[in-house]
Amino acid sequence: MIYLTGELVEKYKNGERELSLDLGRNVTMVTHELDGLPLDEVRGDFVYAWDGKELWKVAVFDDGLYRLRMMKGKPILEIDGLRMHLVKDFKDVFDYSKLVVRALRIRQSDVVLDTCMGLGYTAIAASKKADKVTAIELSPAVLAMAKWNPWSRELFERKRIEVIGEKDCFDYIKDAPGGKFTKIIHDPPRFSKAGDLYSRKFYTELRRVCKEGALMFHYVGSLGKKKRNIMGEVAARLEECGWKVMKKDERLQGILAKAV
Ligand SMILES: C[S@@+](CC[C@H](N)C(=O)[O-])C[C@H]1O[C@@H](n2cnc3c(N)ncnc32)[C@H](O)[C@@H]1O
Image 1: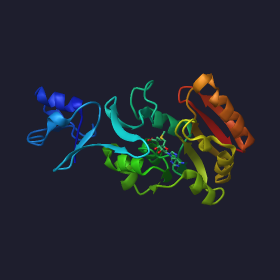
Image 2: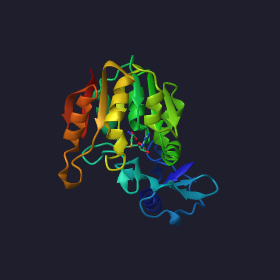
Image 3: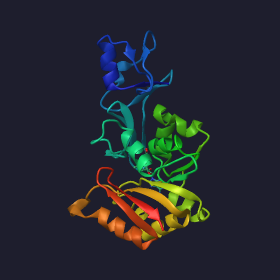
Image 4: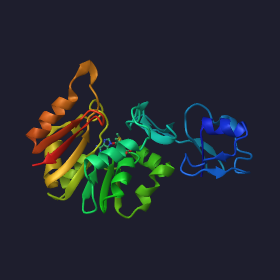
């Protein structure tokens, strides 16, 4: 598969030949690879893929528009124009995931649950430290994006990562045995899009599937509409459900909590 963006095509047309055909993972000397491809059809800020026969947008219309989009030289997931990654205040797209893994102090013996996999950047970062990472993703469109994204490849190739696709993490957790996990990555869509993943019921179930002393990093987002203090509300709710808030992290826009 060859991946193309407007920026890459422009560079190619300007005579540059040291280019990446896999969204920045590898840079190669392009000789004949782009000969005969319909490069003029690569428009806007979409990511395109050429499979040897056809050129198509790496995007899916499902209950909304799901697509890959390049930011700071790496692909991110966008759903209906909303970015699923915090990138603005970070140098690199992967910085956020690295910092979450560091905040959780993930190490080899950890059994990690990533409730909302997305492109799996956080799950992959966690798997560099922990022996076992289970990542759940509800949306078939997102799973397709992850399968197409060269930067998500480890999700499907690394044995220590188990991807559970087309599954609601709430359902998964309800059926999971108690005390299974030692670290939780909870990076849900924003509150207005996935309220049940911020509910007391959900937090209680999350607590049940964790060992005592387990750590969770919960992305919460910044102030909601009408400057609603979602961070404060979530912190209070977590404390009612067996979690102790260790830190409200303004930079990572989330809460580090401990199962007590
Ligand atoms: C903010 S993104 C996660 C980004 C991810 N941390 C990464 O590194 O790419 C949230 C993801 O949760 C998924 N999602 C939403 N509701 C879900 C649910 N109930 N169960 C599992 N996944 C869900 C969305 O489809 C989306 O891919």
